[in-house]
Image (cartoon, rainbow, N blue to C red; front, side, top):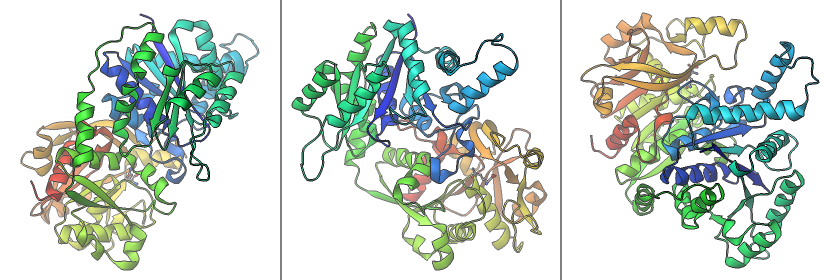
Length: 539
Ligand code: GLN
């Protein structure tokens, strides 16, 4: 069978949940026995998402092979339960970079190098490569941004050309927004009709139209979209707001979206088994007993929306672990700068405390105070990357009495640099080589027998994903261990500290890596699971 390609575009507004629609459709087709891979194309000129500030871009998701990507790849991984690679993430920057390299190396043999076909062909080459590398039957490609923007138009053009060359192998799905204006109280289809017109003007006819809306779409509206957008009524799919994103595969599947797509691609309908999703959604809707988690960080200034975006993998990992324990996670956002002003006592109401990854000096004294509180009040604590480094600093300062111990990221003059820059990173920073140069991606860690970490994982060696430039300073290892800090995971050669923990505490773990990237809704991460169990009093 030829590899098939499904392009997913968005219309009317951004923030539609196009990524979740893409991930959900991927899960449906996977459940029918097809090998799926999902690709995000982003329109910005950055080579990757690593250099974009969190408030602007949300979370930077890291793959096993160490590319810093858009958070949508996290959704694809969670919904498909597969690991993606750098082939699954394409930006305008990567595409132009390659075209310009080839031009300089005379690979175009003196031709005029043009947006069409040279840039579009490079986009197509990358999309095909993603399919080949994953040995996928179906490649699902999500366009970043909305139809009609100048910035992403070459990606649309590439999809048109791919379909023109392989008419039977390419589908276009358009996801548009259907508002229900307050003064009318009625769902409107015109914005979607118009965004489909914009697509049409680019030479693209959608094969299916998905209507995102507050409520389900009725028959009348489906008929209108069908009539004006030139699709059959069965190919108009309603995608209403729901309380959990994990319900979307079921909603789309109940409207036969998978069957319609496979029929259009000339593929067998396959079996469908979404029962694990049904069970999960049932749990999500029925869990009552709450577990209260305080997440202490600094990226809280721009309002709730951005906040969720910045920590999305951490939030999802906490949910996955809680649901399997029949608990309803309630997350509280604790602004570390507020902790600096008001102290950490409010955290007493929490069942557990999480400090996610971060950079720089703003708010870190508040985080250290929160960690001190967790250690002394014996609140379960999970520190992720910066959360591990700051826990090391807290222990050095307050248990080992190394006054003003710090990370050199914050205080380059500190007398006790318990966290310091990795030697190879220092050279990169001096040369201003910032992009894609952190310690990135999956590295093995060996676990020490008899530790909490080892009993959580039930393994002696694990692979986890990293994104950092600083590390535990081995000059202080003895001193900290003598005072009771347990180093429960290191790189296989023992040199690099990967996990720290405390004895005589219900649960206190810090990881140099980001376990949240590998948590899946149906397979929670072992460290998050142990943390949540400790929060609920189980161990
Ligand atoms: N800022 C720290 C470092 O670079 C931690 C990074 C992180 O939390 N991802 O090492």
